[in-house]
Length: 346
Image 1 (cartoon, rainbow, N blue to C red):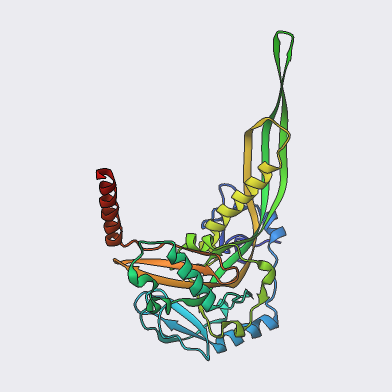
Image 2 (tube, helix red, strand yellow):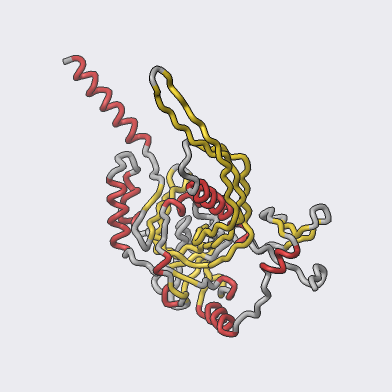
C-alpha cells in the first residue's frame, strides 16, 4: 500500500518534499515544479538503509575537518584538521575557527589538483599580459599571494528525460524539363518518443562564486574522479556548500533539457526542413553526486567592486573579468589622439 500520510516522499529531482494535489491527482514539487503520478513514485522511489561504511566515513569526516568562518563576508572555509586558515579567499579578511564540519557535507567524489600553484601563477601572468589597461597592483606579487587552491563544491547530476516530439519534415526536389521548372514537395510525419539520458551536468553549490565563472572553466574530466579521502584536502582549502540540490536544480534542469532538445533535434535528418508541431521534455528522475572539484581562485577588489579569476585545477582552463584602469585608458587615448593629429599635420 502507498500511504501518503505515513511517509513524506522526496522529489526524485531536487529532494524537496512532494505534496499531493487534489486538482491533478499527482504528487507535486512546489520547488522545482516537477509532478509525478503515484504509480511513477512507486517505481522511482526506493527506500534504502544507509550502509554502516557510509556512517563511519561521515563520522571520520566530521572528526578531522575544521570549519573557519569569515565575519566580514560570511564565507565558511573548510580545511583538514592539521591545516589552519588565516584569511578569507573572497574578501581577504581574517577568519576564525568556528568548529567541526558535520558528516552531511562529506563529498562522495573528488578530483585532485594537477595544476601546481607555480603553473597557475604563470598562466595568470600570461593572461594579464594580454590586457594592457589593468591596474598596476593587479599583477603584483602581493596580489599573486592571494591565489588559493580551492576545492569548490559541485552537485553533478544525471537526468532521465521523457521526450515527446512531433514535426512535419519536408523534402524538396526541383528540376528543369524543357522550358519548364518543376518543384516537388513531399511531407512526412516525424515522431520521436522515448527516454534521453544526460550524464554529468555540474552546478557549483557556492553562492559567493559566480556561476558563469565556474561554467566558463568547464569541463572537468570525470574519468579522473576518485573516492573522497581527507588527504586530498592537505595543503588546500575547500568550500562548504550553501546551495543544496533543490537550489541548483533549476540550473541543472535548464542545461539538461537544452542538451536533450539538441540531441533529439539533431537526430532528425534527411529533410530540407522541418516544422515542429509538438515538443515536450520532462525530467522524471535525477541522480546526484556531491563532489569537490579543483580550482585556483583569486579575487581582487577595485573601486568597490570584486573581480574574480578562476583556473581549472585539473585542465588549466582559465576565466575571469579583469578590472579596467580608466586613467590608463584615458592616457592611452590622449596619446593616440596626439599621434594621429601629428601624423595628419605632417
